[in-house]
Length: 452
Image 1 (cartoon, rainbow, N blue to C red):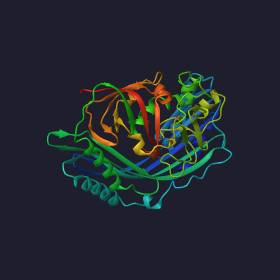
Image 2: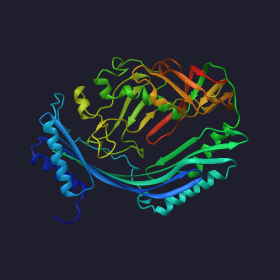
Image 3: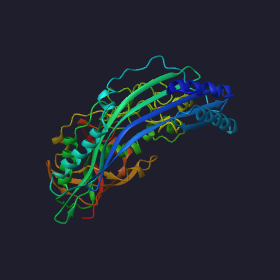
Image 4: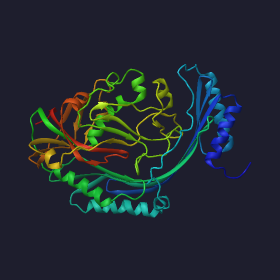
C-alpha cells in the first residue's frame, strides 16, 4: 500500500499486529522531532544543522513476558518487523511476576496551555542562524570575552501513544533555546567558562539577557579572593542547587528507588525530613513548562504533585509499573529518552517553591556564592555525601563581591544539609536548565577546601 500514513494510525496498526502475532498486550509510542540548530565554538559560528528524526517504539507483553523493539522512520514493513521482534523477544524473556499490565486511559487529560507556537513551528532556518550570529556578536562586544560554546535552536515535537487497553493520545509542541559558554581572558587571568541558557515553548529567548548574565558572572572572576579551608555560609545559585538535589534528594523521590528499598526517604513518608523552608513539586501540566505534555510516555495524564511540603515527605513519582508495585496509581511520570527507550519513572517540570528572602538577605555577612559546580553527578545517592569543584565560587562580604576563589571544593551531605543547614530560600525562582525551576538557597556551616 502506498501513500503517507499518520503516526497515530501506524501506531494503531502496530498494536493490532502485535496482538495478531500473539501478544496479550501491546503499546506503540511515536515521536517526531524536526527543527534547526546552530552551534557556537571558539568565537565562530557553526553550520546550520537540520534536525529530522522520527520513529516508533513498541512494547508488548506475552503473559508476564515482556519485549521491546523500535525502528527509525515510519516504513510499514519495517514497523511490522519491529513488532515481530518485540513479540519474539517477549517469548524468549523470563517472566516478570511483578508485571500487572499496561495502563488504561486516564479519566481526563489536562489542557496546560503555552505548549505550541506557530511562530516557532514555522521559523525560518535563516532566523535561527541570525540569532546565533547576533548572540556571538553581542558577547564579543565586551572586551577580552571569548566564546567557547553555545548555540541556538528551534524544534517542533509530535508524540503519540496508543495501546491495546484503549489509550489513544496525540500531542504536539514547540521548543526553542539559546545558550552561551564564555570566559574572559585578560592580563594573565583566565576566568572559568560561564554557561547561561534560556528556553521557551512559545517564543525565542532573549539573547541580550542571556549574554548579559554570562558576561556579568565572568567579570566577577577577573579579581581573585583568598579564603582558608574551613566552614562557611554558602549560597547555592539555582544551577548548583538543582544538580546536587538531583543526585540525592530527587533520586530518593523516585518510585522505583522507593520500591527497591534504596530511597533515603523510604521510611520517612509523612515525616519532617527536610527543612520546613523547602517544598518540592513535580508538575507535568505546568503552563508553558519546558517538559509539559498532556500525557506521559505511556499515555497517562500528567498533573501537579507535591512531593515534599514544607519539609514533610508526601509522595514519590511513579510510572504504571512501579506505581502498581507500590500499590499506587501512576503519577503521570513515565519518561522516555525517545522512541528507542522504554518508559521509566522520571521528573517532568521540577520546581522548588520560592522562599521569602531577597538577594540582599542572601548575601548578608561573609558568604561564598557558588555559581557553577563540577562533579555533582558523583554524589552518593544512597548516603547524600558529595564533593564538588565550585567553579566559579565568589566571595561576598555584606553584599559586595570580593573576588573569585579558584579551586574551591565544597563537600558535605546533601540529605543532612537540606534538613539542618538551611538558613534562607530566595523569593525569586530561576530556570537554570530546561524544565527546572529553582530559587537560590543559603546554607550554614558548609565545608570548603581552598588552595589558598
